[in-house]
Length: 126
Image 1: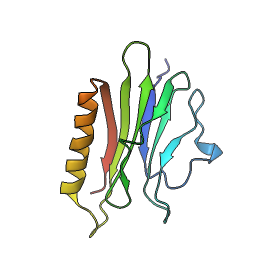
Image 2: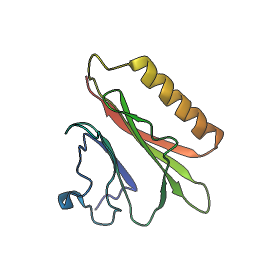
Image 3: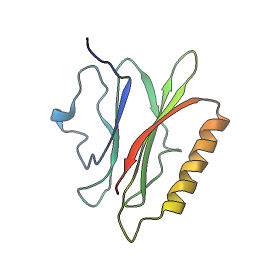
Image 4: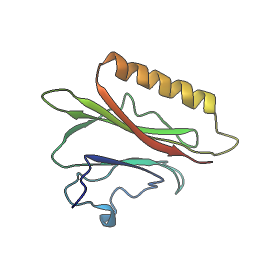
């Protein structure tokens, strides 16, 4: 019995959006946000190719080494969903948990005001 996912969030994607080894059958190309300078960090989303998606740049706040967020909207005729992958690197001394938390709260307030279903995936370095 196979398992099927509508989306998969990943972190530490670096600059790999055109890497053919990362193509998943049945998925759109990997959607990424990554650090312009450097080879670490970044976030990405694999989304099933039958999903109608729009990247939500207004929610995709990305400050390298502090917080790295990518959000998309899965548009449907019934109820749209917001899907995001978040990554909070532990890049001392740049790390700012308070700023990261308040920024995420602001994003969640926007999503809540839009009355859309939301799913957040992600991680944080220890």
